[in-house]
Length: 392
Image (tube, rainbow, N blue to C red; front, side, top):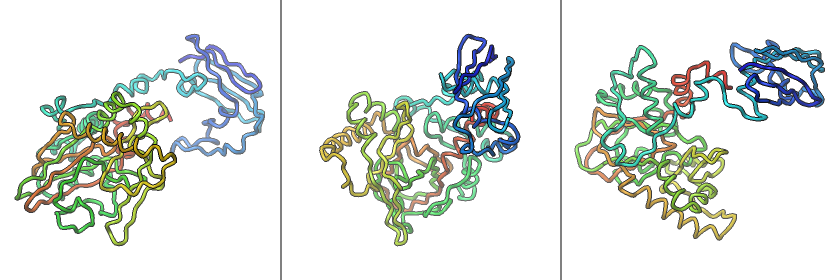
C-alpha cells in the first residue's frame, strides 16, 4: 500500500493512504517499534530497545514521507526511525485495516477447519503414507500431513513398520516429542506400570488428555503394535462440531461451560500430583468468541467445591448432561478399530478419543507433540516465512 501523506499532531501521526483510507498511530507506539539497528536485532527478529525509557511526551521533531515509507526524527535523543509503508498498513490499529499481503489476508481461508460428523468423514478418512512423510526430501508431504491434521482434527498414517523405533521416527518427522511423567515416547501394555486407566483394559469414555496440565498436549499419536484379544475399539469425536451444536441448541449451557472452571489432577503415581495453575472451563474462546480449545475428561476431574454462585451447580450438571448427550450421539462419535501398521494422530485440543474395554494382550506405542511447535511448522509451510514473520 502506498502512502499519500503523513502529518503529526501533538500525540499522534496520521497517514493518508493512496486508496483514501486513514490510519492514526500514537507517537509512543511508533517509537516503541523502531526497527533501526540500535533498536532491533534483525538477524534474530528480537527487539533491543527498552520501551520503559520512552518519554511520555515524545513527539516528532520532523516527519518526512514518500510512497513507501515514513521517516521521523524524535524529540527524545534526536533518534531517527524509518517505517515501511507495508509494515504500517499491516499493523494499523486505528482502524484495523485489511493486510495487503495476500498470504496473510487469506490465512483464515487457507487454514480453515472442516468440522465433521460421522456421515461426513467415515468413508473418506484423512490419510497419508509412512514412506511419504518419513525421510521426505522437501516440505510438501509434511505440509499435506499437517494440513490434514489441522483441518480435520486427525489423520491416519498407513504402512507404518510395526516397531516402536519406526513409530518414533514418524513422530519426529512432524515435530518434537514432548516428555512428561509418562516418559517421552511410550511403549506400554495394560499392566498398570503407570497408575492411569490408559494402562488398564477398562472402558475409557470420550476425553482429551492432560486436563491436569496448564500446558495441555497439542497432538497425540497412537500405534497399536499387537493385540491378541477382542475389543479395544477407538472412537473419535469432533468436539468443535459438537460445541457448535451445543451453542446452537442450548446457548445458555454453552455459555456456562465457557465460564465454570473444572479442576483436574493426575495423582495415581506416588510422586506425582499434577494440577493446572488455574482450573479451566470446558471451552476456551478467543476475544471474538471463536473456539480455541475443548478440555474434557470425566476421569481426571477434581472435586468442584469453589462455586462463585451456588445457583450454577444445577445449571452446570444440566449443561453437562446436554454436552455428553451430544458427544455420545452416534452421529458424532466415529468408531474405528486400530490395527498394526496404521497410526492415528489427532489434535488433542479439538478431537476427543475413547477406547472400549478389551481382552487379551494389547501393546501400544506413541507420543505427545507440543501444539505450538506443530502450529509454527504448519503456518510457515502453508503461508510462507515472509508472510508469517512480516506479521509479527
